[in-house]
Length: 227
Image (cartoon, rainbow, N blue to C red):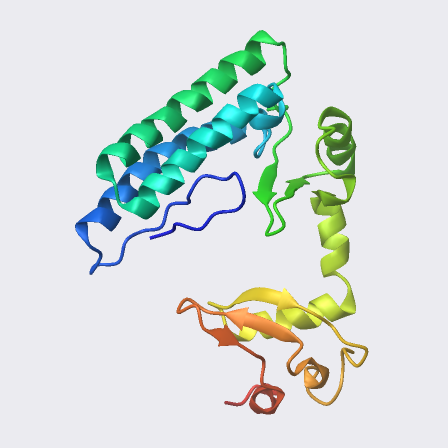
């Protein structure tokens, strides 16, 4: 069960394991309701943007209510948990109405986009074109410009020789996910296999959530298409 969350963020949903106890199953099941409300809010207003559109007093009340929810989870108090979660759902409705009444502009639905909350709590936005990125920059003053990207820009980044080598490595393990990329001064594409300089520079995780580091010696077996 997830009880840790970023500051002022409500607890996230995690699917309980088959051996989960009744309390964990109840909590995660109810959190789905809250997550659904937040997802609808983020689609309408932008990732975590709604709380920035209301007064400080209202924002403080919203975060206080969230603290009650977290406290009830930690105390395993079912009655208080159910009550505080219902309060959070109502709170989203109150904030939505206040932002609407104040004439706040929802996120531009005409621009397809992906909004992602990063580990540092800031929001990254990915759109299709540079023109759309510029439009988002003008409309969403709360976003940091260096976190707004277009697919055009990402395509250019992926075309870099170093990233092309990363793509080749990822292709060797179809279920792998790149979890960190920290190139050193010695990080250079090429070499006998094309992968020689990548040892310990990349960290992957597979479906079993185990770290995977590329083994250039093992890759040698693939050099001529052999196994």
